[in-house]
Image (tube, rainbow, N blue to C red; front, side):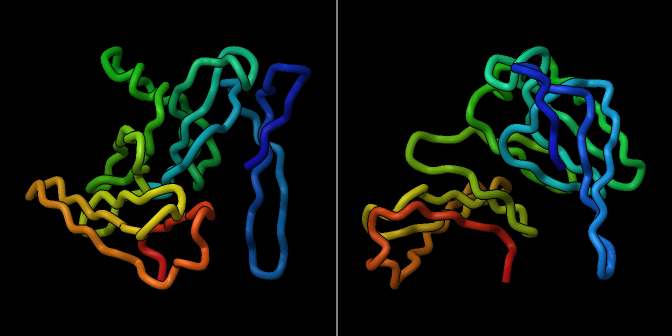
Amino acid sequence: MTYARVGNAVSKEHQVLTLETGKLSWRMIECGVPHFPHSNSVCINGVLYYKAKLNGSCLTGDMMIMSFNVRSEKYSLIKVMEPFIDAVRHATTLVNYNGKLASIRESVFLHCVGVTDSNEVVLANHSLDGPFYVFYYCLESETIRRVEIQGLGAFRGFRVYTFVDHV
């Protein structure tokens, strides 16, 4: 998905790339809510959810949650209840928890990578400054597992990108 800038503001037009066998197709799709896609995304049952900045420029707009239905190709603004609006504006990660959209607030040293199929929250460091650990937190049992990833010593000081459920 792309977005178009009009000066300092964002437009209502977005492009969507369709992947078909042997060909790629970019199409313009109208959205009634001018927004700038921002941050991570998660797809649940054919609906892509992502944080977006609204109401103004991509630098100063209000942070909200948008959805894009892949089947119908329709955008929607997700209404966030008042007590949780501030949480959306801060460093949070959108995740699929039991088939529902959830948001996890980031900590200072660890960031949320995502949630596994067994509903464990996966946390990891952003960089290699020492031993590299991945943490698995089970919300149901409130237990945490720490797994050390070895063999990364040559990459000390590098940025680390951790992905969930990829083989």
